[in-house]
Image 1: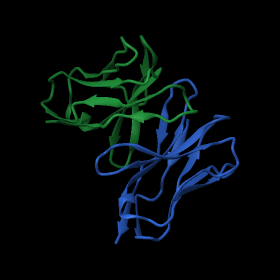
Image 2: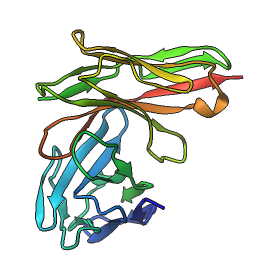
Image 3: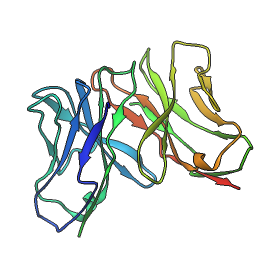
Image 4: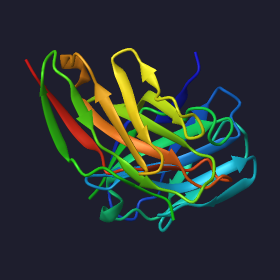
Length: 113
Length: 115
């Protein structure tokens, strides 16, 4: 079954404690992105990757890191989480821009206290 | 910069009735795609319908159809014969830059379906 798998689905952490949210896709997609969803703002892109070892900033990259060492995996790293990073996070993948749908993970609800 | 605007934070509809969700967008892309995503309480993002901008014919998927007005940059979603399972948040989105696979989302519209 084609899918994007995110883990964990829920996470509560304390300010400053490094964390990683994993994302894996089994569709051999080139494009992968991370988004955060906040009330009244929709989803905003944090980082994206167009292929292995190719990553770049989206609209709200501050406080986040990513890596793309393998095509299927695209982890999101918060080196020193802060309360303003409390949000709902989505990983998404697609094979080419535009002419196909993006597949989304199940979402990760992150709370930083 | 590409933008997507949903001006209706909340909508409600009676079961079996029809409802239309509004979306306007702005893009400098000559070729682009427009989407409606549904997000039920499970938080899963589900593609409802897709429109290719170069196609004049409005997309339809069963009870879901769009009214795509390219000149007006409008892309509304019509849900016919509304069902309780249609209750969700709906996001309008477009692919922005041609090189990043980036989706630009609207703010979302929460749809309530009344029995």
